[in-house]
Image (cartoon, rainbow, N blue to C red):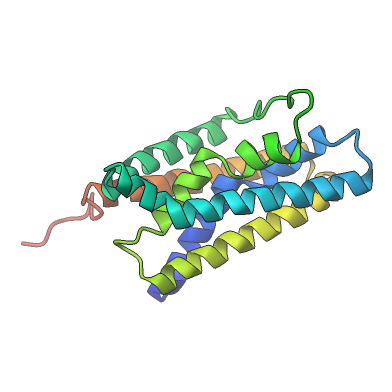
Length: 209
């Protein structure tokens, strides 16, 4: 498998898991149950657009801001890997079942909690910053990550728009199983990020003399 294809697969798995379109379907369906169909469609579109803007800003300006305050990318990778691992553990053991709570009165559902923290949470922002490290990835590779991000967000919008149908097909239990499977994948990817940040990516392999 070519290095580019490997990166595309890793980027997709990481971004998909941190944005969690399947988990957002159940949250969206519950929060918009009292809305009309047209209102649900508008809410799904606005939530996805808000999440897109937030994550694109994280890709473009995230590392610049970190450099300005003196945080090295290796430190961010290590912290990001640990955060993603903890997020994966919550996915595996059901710690995300309660997120997020009911919105405050007068707040826009599309902003909170559907865009933040459901789609564009700290884990997703951390992931896209790490995956577009200026010191590691070329501009074309960063552009590829951006395309993958937009593809996942488009899928998220489609899932939200057809949330009622999807939940009827897979059920809440099916959604819970899928979330936990993706948790295992995210935990593995988080370990890879941590090992790379510590320069021990070949951890566990026999050393050649």
